[in-house]
Image (cartoon, rainbow, N blue to C red; front, side):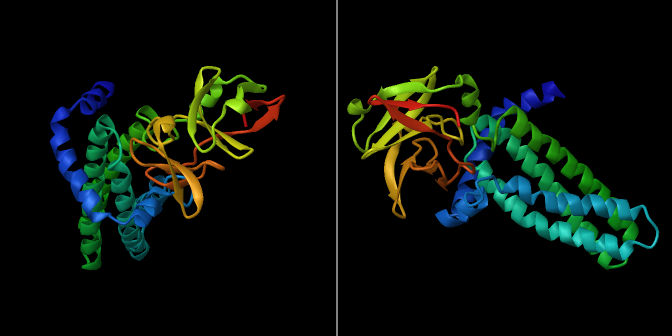
Length: 283
């Protein structure tokens, strides 16, 4: 299995298809506000993993009811609920997929294909059940559940092995020792400019606005982009930093994600000034 997954990650033949699908996704999901909703920006947590619980739960439950006598109607209702709730989950998944790295997109493409087959099987299962062909409906549901299980396995590989959808900046907190650390002399910090400094060899972004100073992890939560090379911008009156790689935008006051594709906030570190020296520590 490890060998199969490695070959899938390295399957360059999928790249041309990925590029075409990426163009379709970008054209289909154009409004920034809609993309942010699908990324889970308002939640501070990726939306797709939460949405997939609904169809998977309904479909697994329908499979259990299929094994019990007198539960045809209940099983059909759950198949219908799972099929309907799978649509927004798939849309959110494609929205996240479009901003992944090439290796992640290869696995994600097969992940989406498996789940698409599963959805098609369950749609067929629903149609069969509604027309009284419950045996065919159960068989199609079993095939669909198998496909969705395979897709879920690949989704786990995407998240836990390839790091898709996780906050890429937070693990660096473990490299910072406890206690306060000197960052820079306040007199050396310019106003309204991004500076990159290091705390225990961990890169941080420093931004000064008057006497208020923000110290934020420099690696973007989305795909480890260099926020220190980003752009300071204003969004709805909030001063933000925009990642130069994929455009994720974070509030420079508190690290809240304002625009995706990042679905989680950027970690901000506590600060204090002692003897004219800016210091920071772990949250």
